[in-house]
Length: 366
Ligand SMILES: *Cc1c(COP(=O)(O)O)cnc(C)c1O
Image (cartoon, rainbow, N blue to C red; front, side):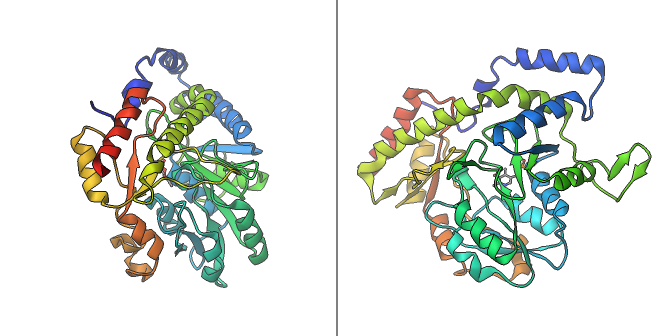
């Protein structure tokens, strides 16, 4: 049996309903911003429970432009988790600000208890990453940020439909970035992203930033960027948005099946920890295991697409050399990097495929 990580061929087996809407759009020739983008922004904001949403070119741009709109630039520091996807730090560094890393906890997200020690007089913002779909403890982080006068920009790229303490990921900070990359839980047919915010000022700034600083056709208020959400992609996103809750529910169901099946393998296999006050959306199902490399090879040989997110924490990447970190600086993330494995956990897996993954993992440790 083959158990694929990518579900795109199954998800878009019948693309006709979406193509019909795109055909209509193309024949009208309205291909930048316009109605479909506005409609998707409004529906998206409502789904997240934020006042406003602004569509942009990618999740990375959503983070970068949020930081820019918040006024972050050279001389500033932004605190974030060391075990995130490269784009989080990339967005910070592209503003000219400095990335300050903090270690993660056993849930693979920012350890809020370690944030305070990283605050300096240059710290302007903290960027919690709801990594893997696991929400950060936003109640504690918000209290800390208020105490130190820090802005919160959420990296919600992997956390659409996530919730913590009764609030949706992306509705809590000053602004939040989402990604619609083809392998994110809400996925379009290429790159795209969205920013949610409750601040009218940030919204207005973002609308200018994504479109050349253009107030009207002939007036440029500042030199901006071209990072508009593609109108064709807004059609795809708006079509799929009503499916997100079901997608999340199915992912959670598969995660619970894995949890129950691997409980007998503890502590050799440690399934992802989560609290009762959280809705973890399982963009990734990551376990910590003994003999990780051997398990990885065994599952690959069995036809199961397994991955490691990620084998090298960001502070040890060549790109981070100027930040001056070294081995031993973030022991939790470094230890996890050698022990983590990501199992397929998407909404298009069949019961037989889930059962096969379980059988192969159990078989390996027997
Ligand atoms: C995917 C991702 C991004 C970047 O999104 P793109 O749309 O690929 O630019 C940022 N942060 C995290 C945690 C991500 O997983």
